[in-house]
Image (tube, one colour):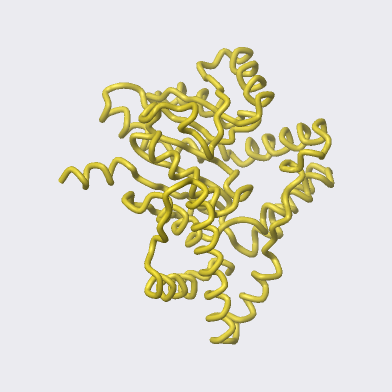
Length: 310
């Protein structure tokens, strides 16, 4: 429930037949507006179809509309106390450790890492966007050594204090990781074309609009030789209860609040696929479910290039 796979795809088909897909864009701002508009219209048409069919589908649509929110998390509120934010970040890190989330993310990336390394005859170069506290970037560096993954890892954020803290922790832990100040919506200003092989974002997609996600993918298209990979929560009704419940274990109201907002902002797999299709229409995309509660978006830039050469 809350994925609406059939009705969502039918809504997309109808809109695409009327006006074509993907919608045209030239600048990043046009891309953001086009993706937000198109995916918004797909959701509206999906809702109309669901109510038209009635029954359980109409009930599910009403529930989805009640759950969805544009409310921001405390972590995204510039006026929220920084010390409380840091405690929330540490609490999230502990949950990720408890549920072996970092191990799962590395397993997701490992096949692409090995493939890129074999193709280029050197370690694969991975850039993590919006790495925040940098705990996944650091965990991947540690696990890469353990698993003998041929990879060089760079973390990034647009907030200078996060970048400085990430570099401090890397030095403190003796890990070969660099953190850089990079704006995920304007990577071309600080990253050279082809400088990385894989651009990755973990557990942060829901912080952005569909248009902003499309901007990231389009920027990655010019930056990465191989792929964009995004991992976030799987939009479903159980997670709406489970996430706040897990957060409650930390006994912090602010953490419970953000977990509640996160569960309501998660994208469906169709929304992820459409954002990628608008941002990089020449690159094949695939969205898969990583059991039990993650969705993974793969957009393969290398396949698009090899197809073009043929």
